[in-house]
Amino acid sequence: MAAAAAAYAWARWCFASASPPSGTVALVGGAALIVLTCVVYFVLVEGSGAFFGVLLMALGLFLTLEAVEEGTARGQTVICDVREVTSRVLQSSGEGSISTTVYHFTLSCPGGYPTEITERRPVTSAGKRLPIAYDPQRRVSPSIEGDASPWRSALTALVLLAAATALAARRRAPDGEEFRP
Image 1 (cartoon, rainbow, N blue to C red):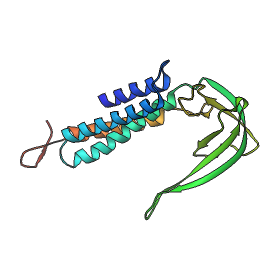
Image 2: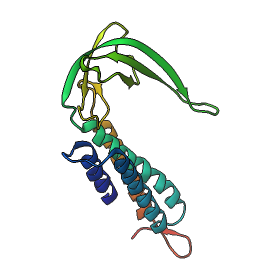
Image 3: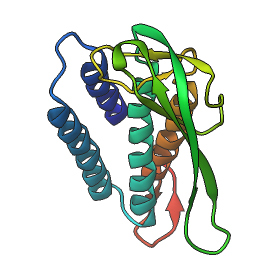
Image 4: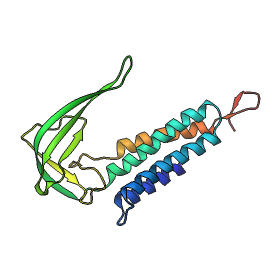
């Protein structure tokens, strides 16, 4: 959970502070934090729990960063005209693949920003108006006003990080039998 706290603090600094790092430093620092955490986890945890724990840990840390991004205030709101709506179906490969549809909205907003948003649902059609909340400093992505909520990402991150912690807590006896301290 210390890794999640560090990821949260890093993301808050990058997304919401008065003097954030550059985008490159933010990206490299966040990636280094996640990779370092996963390497330490893998070294400290033995067996198959290390592999699966690293996967859960990495996903949980990414979702922690996403929750901070979603929860960051977007200080300006503008009513934009929706010029065009396109959709694209994204499919994973393999038998029984999962597909999801992504909707891309091309916008015409006063002041020229934002110019587009992407959603996983069809929120409106071309020719309609859409209220968009955005950060004038462009540190976080624009969203439909009132739509950004960090709770889903935060709760999912909590579950994944708890599962990774539970895997790390498992210990093996020298003869291979499992025991709990």
